[in-house]
Image (tube, rainbow, N blue to C red; front, side, top):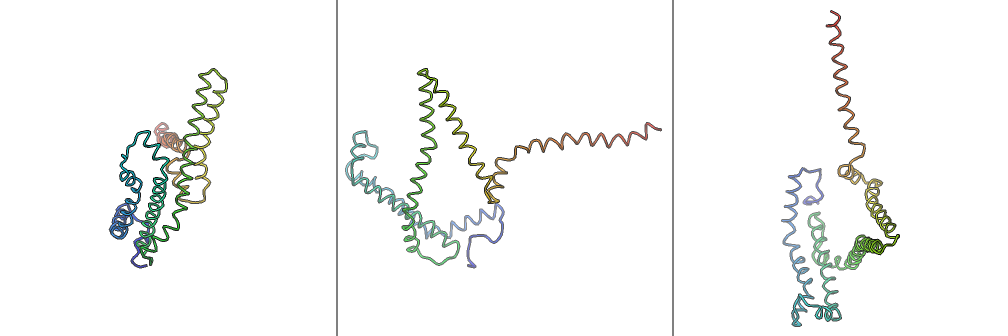
Length: 228
């Protein structure tokens, strides 16, 4: 563990962080590059099948429909996804083992990456559904509301108001969740990025009190001169 590059023993400056990043890159490049190259090649298996079958990559509507119902294409697509995710996991696990000076080989990282591949694919599917629900559903609701307005219906304004409230609730959910988090780093990040609504008032009060302090200090100095 004495040769471990990560985690650092103490907080580092910006220059030290950059130096550590280059050291990690140099120590893990050659041992992780084969996995990364194989991941790129595995991701091109569906395109290789398309070219081998005499079809162009940029197909028209008819060829795209034919490709959609081709079971070999979808089988290669699933294999490419599994191999790409497995090799990407192996890169991350192998790099982590190298920089933390933990015992491990490329084969162990590859087998661990294969075990975690189904979970990673499921996570990306859930992220895709979440993004679709976050962007597509409000757009559909807005389109339906505008359609109701053009048709002269009174429900369009209510639908637009509901969409606005929904978007406002989603926008307020993330800051509230971060604020209620018990992790100090997240609270500090929120304080630095979002700030406090009372900060402008807190800054303006000392500035407004400063002239009064100056005048209160100048009055006792002028009083003896008036008395003389």
